[in-house]
Length: 585
Image 1 (cartoon, helix red, strand yellow):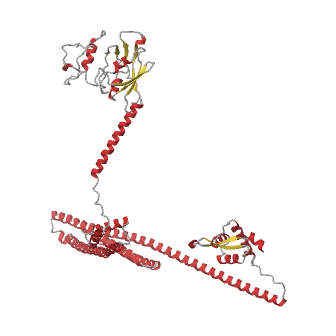
Image 2 (cartoon, rainbow, N blue to C red; image 1 turned 30 degrees about the vertical axis):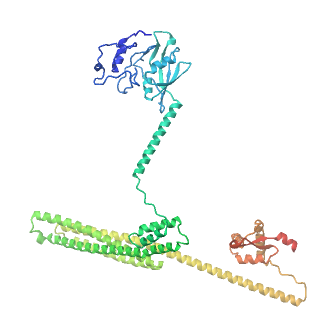
């Protein structure tokens, strides 16, 4: 059924803007003499309206260009554009991989066929979910068609020519978040990530250096060849790598142990060769250093002669006979020669300072005693002081000479100033070295004082031990004499009742017995004599192991010694048996 067109010129204008011949609803051309080259953009090939993905809605234009929306006529409805002065309709953030749009503001009498007719021109539709209310969700086959559907947001829709409220509405098109879109987008991202990983792996495999050739396994034939290679100096590094691999693989057994021993012995024979080569290279380096030093000293001497020539020419006897240009050249040459001479002098002095530092380091390593090192440092300190005084005297003499004898020319002033600067630099270097040596001397003296204090403390400890030993010997003699006196008195008195001597001889031993009993009572499995003494020494540091062990041995009914463990773990432990001993006594 055909429908009347209210304004065919507007429809023709919209089709002309797209570069298509204006076609009516029935299919005939509205302008028979249409020229495609008369469109808005000249030089563009006319578009085919039947191309896939191309409908009546134009593609989204750039934000900088003004978008002109026209009236759109469909078979069963008409779309009227919004007011161009109004702001564009708001939309939510576009979800990743969005293919679904939300369409609101539909007429109450709208059907899926009408929705398909309006939005089918934007692209292929895969699903339409229409609600009982005035909205629906449309899922397209491609993502770019969603932008075309958003172009219709804000349009007023009217079914046919009816003015009923149920046949009109204002479209609102926005992005919709669907699980299917998100799932397809994640699948596509995973596929791209897999392709990227594969591409990187291929690139890494291409750029990876070739792996070394595999090392063969041990055999008698390979062993004989490897033995010959190890003896060869040129093939030794490769052969040692093969031998190391065999040893790490564990290919040594009783049968081939002699072969491996001979190969290891051959490898050990190269140590002497490598040591001799190293010493030879060191010797060559030292010879090269000496040669360079002598050559540099000769060069410096020649520079000194050249500078002295320039200084002699700068004196008034010869200087007055030169022209102005010659004097200028002589002055420039002299300055250049002095700069080069000073540079080489500094280099030579640096080499000599390095040699002196190496020699001093060797002397420090060779000195076995800290006292001798301190004496050597003192002597070196004195020598540095003498050198420092000599440099100071030279500087003072130069200053006095400079004050007495006025310089003949500006060149002599510059030479004296340069000599003064060199001497000042040398003086500063000597002062720094002197301070460093003083610090080292202080450290050595502090170490020596500390060692003397330690020695004094050791002497005091030895003296205390001697006094303690003497006291113990005196107490033992007194105890023996007392027992002899008691026995003699008992013999004189006659056959009286003999009382056995008490195993606890003093109050201190009684305290020890009580403390040890309490300690062993909380250790039901016993404790070693070292463990008991470590506990008692916290209370009294004068307690020793032999005294405690003798006390425990004199009380067999109170303390019992047992052996625990087997073999190397055999250990003697003391247990408290006073509860069993009270019954037996």
